[in-house]
Length: 282
Image 1: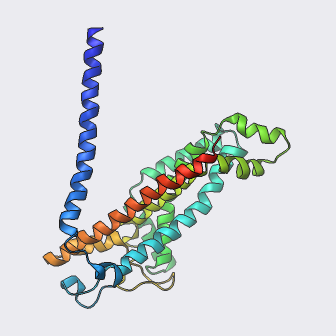
Image 2 (image 1 turned 90 degrees about the horizontal axis):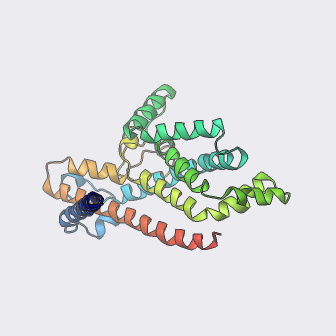
Image 3 (image 1 turned 90 degrees about the vertical axis):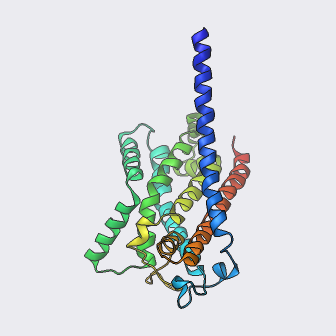
């Protein structure tokens, strides 16, 4: 009994230390971004595109990267959503949860989730060369959609699996079709969690740099069509921090601060909307 008490205290100490390290790391990251980025952040950074000599310390901002990031992440999220949700509903409502096809889809999604994003970028670049395409917003959207699709599938799958089997069988016993069960029962019960999955995927898409480096390209202007290259905030941060000019590097931290605020707002939105949608859950 004495040893069990000691063991419990040791484990508790490890848990506290792990929590302190996690929170401390987050605070250090945010603190460094605020310390370097806040003095360089101004209205021009978020309202203007790069002007001549921007990367040499002259005037301008990263509006092109902000808008490009939302274009790319939004388009990729919508495309991944259109593909992912029918798959998740099919393997959970139309098939048995332990069906071999469902297990195969989950295994493939797990493998794809673990593939580094630079591999997706290299794949997209190779495919573009084969098809004779150039870097564009469309190419970036397609590659990023493939990147976040397994994330959306696995999160949505785990959420839908929490729906009790009795709740799926009840409408079927009353004459409802599986499609009606999927739309009117499953989606209603899991709306909060599924919305969380979408926003998590969106946050992953807007913060990725490697997959769009060779596909979406980079441009100092805001894209007006899917065939034009598009800048993103992660690439803008990378390019600014790579220069030897201190003023430009500070702008890179300011860009990182903008991206951090966007991710923070996404997280807050996830929490608020999920809580509201979960009120309808039985």
